[in-house]
Length: 129
Ligand code: HEC
Image (cartoon, rainbow, N blue to C red; front, side, top):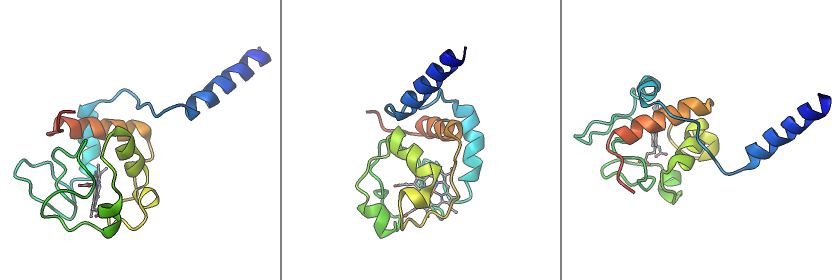
């Protein structure tokens, strides 16, 4: 038994080193998570910005590229595209993932919350790949 438990632990460790795999996502639960974002962000089709940029269609958009929003130099220079992996990494701990960002938000440490809110963002105007 002890031997088996050891093997399981090794398998789990090996798994965590593998490529990023998001947990199954629930967009409805993501809508609830998005309440934490809604004081600064909207997914409104009108494209209006708040304290943060409009997030309609943000999935697979280039970071710092929404017209009319005054991004931090760090965001504009980051050069990344908001795919699932980059979003999850940023949302987990924004100021650690992107030093210099002006998104003052503690983050979503729970991978399930990240996956759910990303699913919600996809439902709200994500560009087709
Ligand atoms: C206190 C306000 C605030 C909260 C709360 C907040 N954000 Fe932000 N967010 C910002 C600001 C400001 C920026 C622009 C950052 C920059 O330019 O460095 C931003 C940028 C972003 C970006 C990059 C957008 C782009 O066009 O490149 C994403 C994605 C994002 N936020 C998602 C979220 C999500 C999802 C949540 C909730 C889990 C959230 N934010 C919570 C203020 C906030």
